[in-house]
Length: 125
Image (cartoon, rainbow, N blue to C red):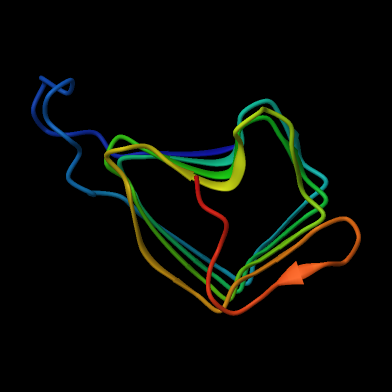
C-alpha cells in the first residue's frame, strides 16, 4: 500500500482540512498482483495525479485508489484490469465526502472476463 498524507499546519486537524502541501504524480507505473486489506493507494488530504497507470490483477479490501480527508484526485489514461475489491460497497476509486475527483478522462475498467468500459471515466464510490 502506498499512503500519501498531507498534514495541515494547524494543530487542530480535526476541523482544519489539509492544504494539499503534497502532490504525488504517477506516470507510466504498473501495480500488479498486490493483495492488501484496504487499498492499493490511500490518499489522505494530498493531491494525486495518475496518468498512464495500469492496475492489474490486484486484490484490495476497500478500493484500488482511496481518497480521504479532503484529498483531490486526477486520473487519466489509467487502466483497471482484472482487479478484485472484496468489501461490500467497495469500488475501483472511492472518495469520502470531503474529497473530490478533479479530472477523469480516457480511462478503462476491464473485468476478469475482458469486458471493459472505456472513454469517460473510472468507477466511483
